[in-house]
Amino acid sequence: MRSGVRGALRILLAALAATSAAPLSAQPKSDWELAEEERRWREVDFMLPQYPKAADLVEFDVSAARDFRFFIDATSLSVGKDGVVRYTLVARSASGVENVSYEGIRCKSGTVRAYAFGQGGGRWSGRGTAWRQIERKQAQGWHFALWRDYFCPHAIAIHDAAEGIDALRRGGPPDAARADTSGR
Image (cartoon, rainbow, N blue to C red; front, side, top):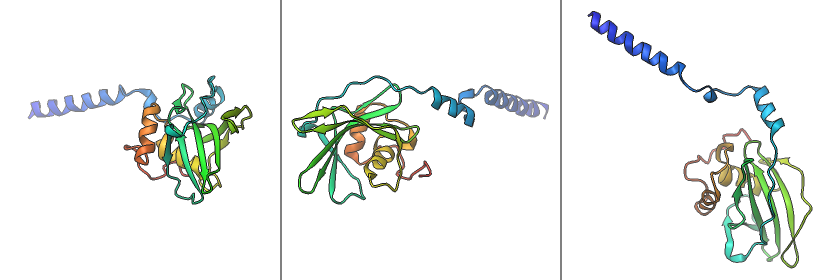
């Protein structure tokens, strides 16, 4: 009987030692830590991509959009060290008119900005926009779809461009639930 108690005690001590050795990084961050990370965040330098070619466009679904079809230029998709997923978006109307923009999504904060807009002749304009919150019920629902369903499952950036292209072709990342876990 003593050996049984000793064995149970050893198991209990081993379990306690294992839990106390768990990494501290796995614990939730405080509001102060999160605010400090946000304050210190800096966007990395980037270059505008080549203007998109029809052969490189991958269509994705935006269920609320009826008058437009949406595409990402596969050659422009990238994931920066700053956690920003950058891509060229092409929105094509039913009449064939196209709006082209080079944009970025910060997965962690759920924000988006445009860096440049397409002009006639396959050129970029250098004017961009400020970061703004991606909202579920906005007129530009494609940003929410890209953030939630393709590039930022659970507000975590895809690993690389190949994963993003695969998500676009599949209709979403294979390991992410379609449910909105962000509360938006």
